[in-house]
Image 1: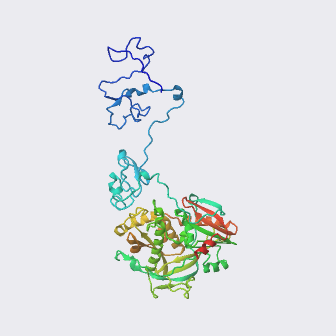
Image 2 (image 1 turned 135 degrees about the vertical axis):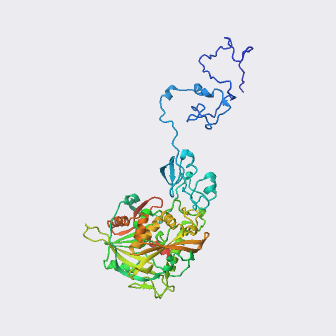
Image 3 (image 1 turned 135 degrees about the horizontal axis):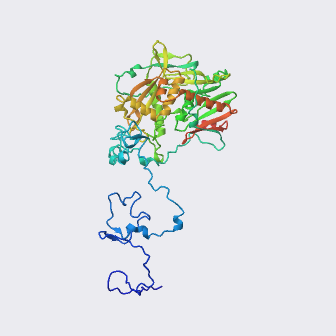
Length: 580
């Protein structure tokens, strides 16, 4: 092992410090060494501070001392005030760059929605008007402005909407988790496609939603070609303001048929007679007209036969179910680890579909005296095979001319539309309505979308409840409005249905019914029917230019994009046989 020998040190007998004799300073030179002055009042508690960042000189970048404006380290390192004098500096390296901007970056806004200028600086806006904002950097940062994003119930939650973390008590911990500044980097929710994209499928087109915003086409009112089925008259007692605040939603066993376009015998007859060129149902066509508002994945099968075009849906496709809070900022999510949850998107869709069928049957008066018979009976019902009664449902097959004024050949679209009930208009004639239902599941559950408590707010704040539903269910309400317009319905009745117990999805109560005229409701939602017709016409023109075959339009599950694929003719036949 190598030995270590201490160097010889000259004795010092007079004062503190190195000796001034030549013998003691041989080999050493302090001539050019910098001197660090200090005050006698300074407390020297550290010989060196190795944790200090180079170039900070004992101060932060804003000119204040480290640790805060009013903080001073009583035990600073010796010579810390002139630490830059002792640092090694390479002139070549220092000359190779220059400082562009040493100011600190502007603080990011903390909170929900958009931005605005208010008194004192930045105003954070999300729901409603806000009061305040940054105001010197304290009121508006962690404490969100009034009306800020509050998720669920509780004090500061969806009921009061006067949010703010305020120590994590009002709204944060008390009312449930709220949207805050820490959610900016939350991982994006990934959805699965509604249909498996096979390797042999060939993608032909990809359309971004933004390309369709300025399309417009004015279409005249459609004309009835034929009518089938029957409808009962609507129970007007549901509209009385003095009616009971809530009543139980009954489970009514009745048959409702919703076959796809190609399986409809009436459409097959009309296609054989060359009554039209394009054929679809109101459910499929409404999705084509409103898909820029859609978030969930879906798909539509397109069949080109000769000069005819058929838009179909697969059995069990998302078009057969009613979505819930699809457009909410935080929509419902599937339970982790594959566990079943009554508030998952699939469970809520089944529940909403169940509610719509039962509410439409309960909202009419089942009586032979209050019944409107159409020209032909229900084309899908076979009394020899079915034992359950038919539900109140009328089918109106209507023709729309989609051709422009400068086009010589007409482009006729045949649509099977549906109406749920009948009412007497001012002249005493029968007019038709559609009956739909919005459902509330749990205002405190994830995916509630900041909805108000319907039981306590529906009678006093009905406008706020409807506005929240327009925001959280924009696509669903737009589709219902388009279906009512296509069917020529006089009114659209919206029922508000809530769970009797938030933890029980099988029992529901009806809180009230509100009626709207479809076109006026579309204006309230800022939905342009002309834009919807323009989108449908562009999709039809794109498909009419294709050769004969089978195609599928698929909505990307995570992007605002639709894609058109060329698929084999037996692409979905195997799946249909497996289901049978």
